[in-house]
Image (cartoon, rainbow, N blue to C red; front, top):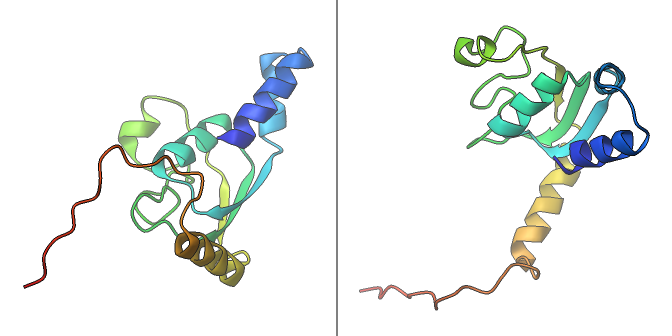
Length: 127
């Protein structure tokens, strides 16, 4: 969504018409680490992006095949009937091992920028 927001901001500054923005999205190819979640995949489909390449599946929230297949123009009818869906080409496994190690390193170190918890964590007693 950061990429989409940045593009929209840039194209607004350039005073592009809606039809020009739609044409530019139809030419976009997105490279990301993890499969887009259901919400992000729906947005990418509605925007009409051309292609998405990602490294690893999102087994809990994936919108490009793991849970739903929102990249397919003939996917879930409850979504298709509400908003026109264009669909996009989706390819999994791009630099999969690098993505795996990137996520592993991140989770091993913890997120140093994460906010501190408001209350202390409760330790369960092991009996």
